Length: 578
Image 1 (cartoon, helix red, strand yellow):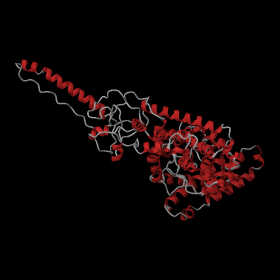
Image 2: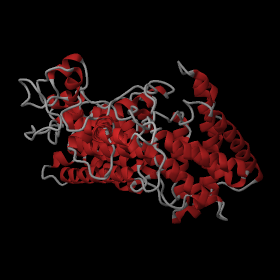
Image 3: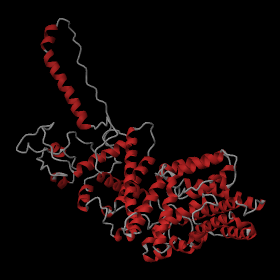
Image 4: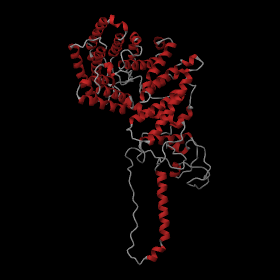
């Protein structure tokens, strides 16, 4: 959620003019007159109805063909041949009927509601209007039965008044409220979805991330220059925004509006795949391995990790990205070419190495190459604070070293070198235990206390992970001494996670330590397991991402099994942290 926008912006200089779907002037004209779809409506609607209401605003902004039929609300005066917008009608002004928005609304700074037959929804501040149910007073009963002649004489007049009242109520319902009677098919242009997704990123997701960071991050920037992005990135952005929105909402059974939005997600994802395939299979080799292709693969990787039906595709995207890197001369060559590439590569290295920690020891992604490139990884990692991952760089490199030892222990020739692997593993564990969170946090210029807490969290998590995963492949003996060390750091880790859960800033920074604590909770109490499960479920909604829910399912399956080793819990390659 935080890396993808920067990937988009950092690659603008490469000249992504080829798949431009939105002329910049048209984009600016539309975006100036669009409101975000998370503001309250005049009446209560479902969240997905709120999404589609902005679609109406955007569709109006794009501009519909002029109507020639007799309008439902006839106008008088010299301009009766033209359709007037709803705002000019309300203000009793002569509308110039300009498209996409009338000039008078634009001049006065009012969002032009357009020219449709039905008056669109009105955007209001929260709590400004309360829904009231109005009841029409029933006519008083006739007291005298002898008044038959007088009642018959007024019957025609009463019927006329009743008809007027009914027509008034129907007209009010049509103009004041938009009732979505037949959800599932809304006529809209793809441009509407792209601009709506951009607004959603910049007005909903970006402010949330910016307000919940320990310090400034070069990876956290709003989405901009979308008119220069090709079809792959534009449509992937839409799919990501829809996925985030759906995961942030409480799910309702048989929700037709959610089904409609889900269908739009698959439509945009399919369009993005087709566009990416065209880039990869292009006849020009430079275009196949261009900056744009690299960025598109990374954005698509992140988008797939967000969704429940697509998260398992992460390895294909990583392999494809690394193939492009090799065709361009390798990691060092790409990083030296331009500083902007480092942000893209670090995103991949974080996913790759943390995914290796939650994969079987024998089935990791390039563990030996990652170990050989650990100096470059450390150099890139120190570029700046990576959002929601306040892990000290020394401990992150130690995770890479642990993954290498796990992999070597599963190789056929490992029996001859098991003693040397054990010695190396014990030295590594001593180095992790000797790490000083106080010294590391003292070097920070701000939020030192919070950084200290995070350093302690990640230190204990790495200790528990190293002992548990290396014992799973028989590199570390299951001795009483190592068992005591694991128990001490496991208890410390749980206490620190409970402390972090009470902080709005720290609660989302402990995803990987929570996975480690979830494994250790196998031998803990039911209260500990319940705490981990509830926190993961909350984080899925809080971050609008599927991976915490995937982690919860994996851990609950492990808790109910009779197995106890690390590789028994993570018996399939999982990418659970981005």
